Length: 337
Ligand code: AQP
Image (cartoon, rainbow, N blue to C red; front, side):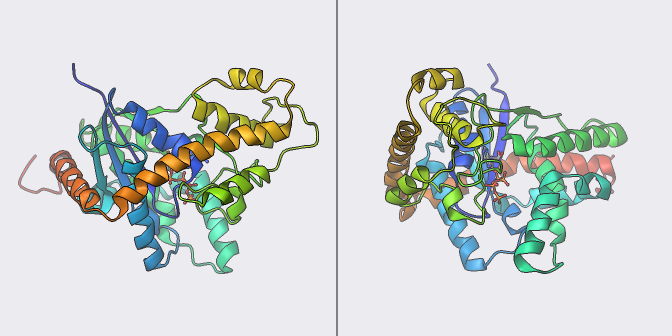
């Protein structure tokens, strides 16, 4: 039986967080048997906000190693570096030309991140890529005829835009793209900042106490969870509006324990916030210790580079076929109709 194809990536704007793990990586790993997975390290998306080149290099190396340390299997899945497959930027350009400025300006991530760049650097220097990257993201997905894209809630708007662009291109030039569906995990599609639980946990978050990076020092992780913002009620209940901090801890716990929020609530019934934080700390530390051990093993080996080369080669085969089809249908390839 043919497996359905799924595609996703994580951006190299910082260190992979527990949010990225629960919302994305954990699902990639779990879905490897069921789907034909194409997963890439999104280094081209990693330059949409200003970043120092040495930090970028470090982020990429850590990120690719983490993919494998978290359980991605090069025998089951195609794992590659985005910039190694040149077709992404070529199709990205073609799609940019078929996307309107209005559509891109409506993206919440653009609004949030451009405000952030302005306030952090005190300048009006907003890189154009911050506006246009959803078209590149559409290319990432459409190149591979991905039927599903596993994303956290924050990325849903971009998938919606991808579908609109794909439909527009199919109608205008002839059938060329598969329309992708999104795949949102039942629990943990949005992990919040530990210090400000009304905001998403982000790898580029300004306050390091607010996010847990998978490579954080274990004692630091314990401290971060201990100091996570809750409320003064001391009642453990899932109520995002009135108890965002406690709800976030419950979400992390249930996602990592693979249980429902209701089961987690039941487990914590009549217990206090101290116990909630201890239990969350235990599951997180347990996970991070395993990942960090594997990470150390892989970091200085040549295995990761060779797995990436193998992944890029496989990805290129599909991507180049699709790009040729698009060039033929859009008139870019003058020799073919
Ligand atoms: N807090 C989160 N909870 C659940 N899922 C999350 N994802 C990101 N943050 C959370 C999911 O991780 C995948 C990769 O995301 P990305 O790195 O490509 O972009 P992002 O959503 O912009 O992630 P960050 O960490 O917030 O990065 P920065 O700080 O650069 O903006 C996606 O599937 C995303 O939904």
